[in-house]
Image (cartoon, rainbow, N blue to C red; front, side):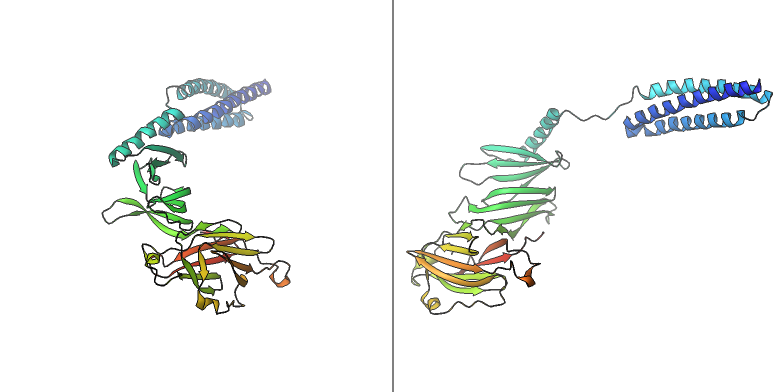
Length: 379
């Protein structure tokens, strides 16, 4: 009789424990979905479940070695356990009803709300324009506003949803080719080099913007101008002034510097306005490994023509330089060094990049500097 009862107890407890475990799993799933604000109450329910499971295990262990009187007590415990399970099921039912659950807002509704916020920010700044475009970034926390006005370069503003702040990204009239939003405090613009207020064609460059706090406590984006790294085969155009002569050529360890002056020293128009380089185009001949600069309406200065172009053997990239004239066009052919196939340079990377910088734009003597690189720096 005792063994039958113990067997009965074992079956009952196994059934109850199984029920508890199933209910526990359901509860954990529902608790996971509930808002964190309701977490305290749910943890109390979880604790009750664990207590009942332990009670069931204790009942089973005790029942395996009990007297008849103790077995009757165990039957009473099982009935009590069953009542608690019924109450627990009711509590679990309440847990899954009447509790607010976070749900994402519909996309269209969210966009409309942000659009209204941006429009409010535009109104606060009193912006006027002919057309505009808004592009979202970083999981809809940042938005780029691009505005268009006839005859002017586009203007750009970054809207931060968290701060409800619309900040100008100053381009100073220069045209933008592309941009990258790193985060709400850091934006990088690739500039074409052309300007809406002048015909001057600068070399392409980078504006690296960081958000700063001004002396009066306002936020604004401040740009740092950086050189743009171009692949060797990329064709670059820049410059706009005619009547140049090449006055100096200096081969450096990294590349070359080229100085310009007027063909006629008495030509006052040469110095009118900003002194800029001649109209220039760069090309690369992969077969001959030659980097070529083509200068329009440019000649070789007489004094320079009498000199031999000195190339330091320690130059890392240039073997020799040739100057060729074709009517009013001057070609500078730069023969680059090759390391491919040379054993001691087997770990070197092939020459792949170059930068161009225009020096002394606001002085009478204008010059450009070209630097060559085996790889693009990471910054």
